[in-house]
Length: 91
Image (tube, rainbow, N blue to C red; front, side, top):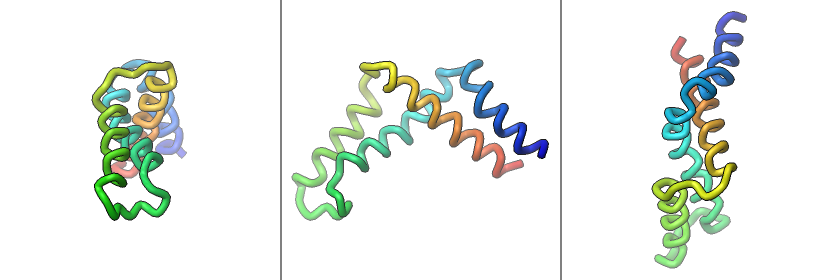
């Protein structure tokens, strides 16, 4: 019970204390999810025209500044959840 409660506290309190760290950590996961969404439905790249939208979406999501509040909040939440679960797995 203690580890589960610690995981929940980690996921909730840590991003409030240090949101920049979780934004950087979760940005990768957000960019990968967005790139997968931009790809072809079967995820098999037959031509270069299949790869270009995926690559551009990844680059725009990962390396350009966020343009809306959701582009800031989603990476923070993803980073907090992944980091919390990773912390729980290592305890």
